Every structure is written in C-alpha cells, then in structure tokens.
Length: 142
Image (tube, rainbow, N blue to C red; front, side, top):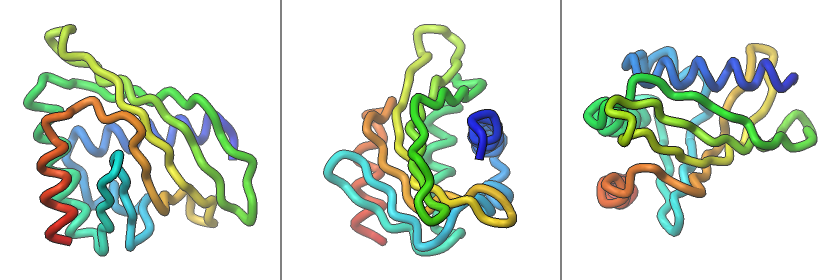
C-alpha cells in the first residue's frame, strides 16, 4: 500500500469519527480489537462495543472544540505476510486554537482485498488525559 493511500484511509477514519458515522468506521476494523493505552488494555469484542468507545472519544473531541483530525504518518513498517504497522500523529484542529492537541498511535494493519483493516491500536500518547479514567472503566467492563 502506498503512503498516500494510507494517509487518505486515516483521513477518512478521522472524518467518520468526528461526524459520528460509526457504522462505516467499523468496516475498517477487525474484531476482537485490542486497544492499548499506556498500561491499560481494552479488548473490543464487537462493533457495537467499539461504537461505545468511539462515541466517548467523539464526545470528548467535539466538547473540546475539535473540528478536524489530521493524520501525519511518521513511519510505515515493511509488510510481512500482508501485515504492517503505521505510526501516526493525529493533530486535532480545534477552536479555540489553544485546544489543539496531538495524539500518537501505532496501528497494526493488514491489506485485504477490500482495503486496509486495523487489527490492533496502541496509543503511545493520548491527547486527552481526561479520558484515562473512562478508558480504564471500559477496560474493566469488557
């Protein structure tokens, strides 16, 4: 997969998240989906559970005034057996400008006949420390 295709795919993910189109967003994930945040781990078993996680994330972003998410791919792994990692810095464009932040994540992906799918996500830096408690609660309830 080309850099431009991966960037476009991630841009679409960001747009779907902010617009609340979770059904379309779920098409790009494989379940169960492990999500790591520092020392916490959440295994999202099904799309309906993922919708709950993404709704919390969307509410926090929109509540902070985020109007766009811009992915900047910093590295792409060499594919092995159709699988590869993508390191992404997500710039959150917000109004007021002081609310603009950056998150960092590693996406574990595979290229399928129907497009790019994410099998796991590891956040190395979450821009919203206020979500740490909610994330931990979701992890315990899963």
